[in-house]
Length: 333
Image (cartoon, rainbow, N blue to C red; front, side):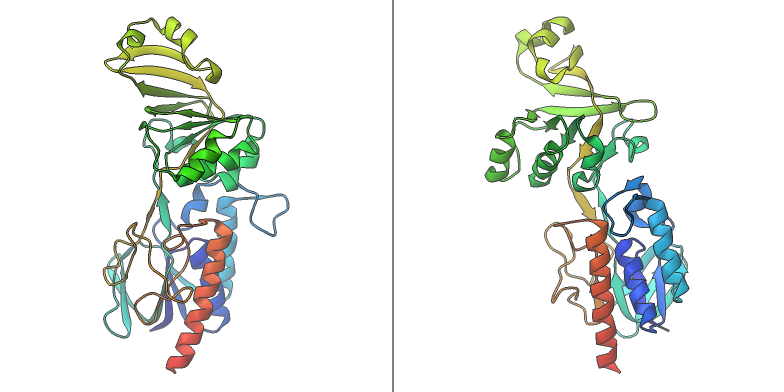
């Protein structure tokens, strides 16, 4: 019997574990087969307090885990399967085993929606990113792409424009989902260029991002009839892109680029919790900071926070959830 079972091992889950164990609560962390969250895919982390020279993402997570283990947290490096929150004690299943807990903290995070194009996954942390506030300073005076059409993509482009020499906002449709005020801000920024009806099809480079291939859909038959050299001369000159051919109703391009920021949304890891209330996007609904609709079940991090999605805010939510859990258990006696 555990006082608290923590589902997830990113900054939220591990911070929660540090706090619950220091409060002498018997704590189990269902860490997952690939523990550590999205920071395990990150190279340099410069915005987590306490590391003036920066720290590698996996090193930061390893340090957090060691700290939780030092205070007595137990870890199961298996994937969470299901939970029964209908009665006390709660039953949590991971792999082929079940565990009992008086309380549960859900800290399962959210996964980035990637483009799923060749060259993307192996360049994550080497020019491909999903977080401008995290990585924009690495692209000072460079040329970057933001892929997306919502408010988050606009925000990424605006953040990057404070560092990069040029930002190209690429959207696969001809209209944006973003609010008008965000669109107006982007249009007013001279550093940001917008490409609509355009999709990235491949990310190229040896050790890091060097260029991208894209396709632009057009109904201009006259343009499609031109040679790649003629298209390049008359179209997208400001972006230093060159046409490499046409196909049916689209033009294929190559563009030199230093970075690609993917901003097409996140998928919260909440679908497995059938008894927990979520919003229309799947993020867990919170009551009074970190409480869920189930008594004794708390939540922390990106699985409910669709606003900030930073390691430091996730850690803060983990702290809050742990303190709320401790108070709740004390009340239950």
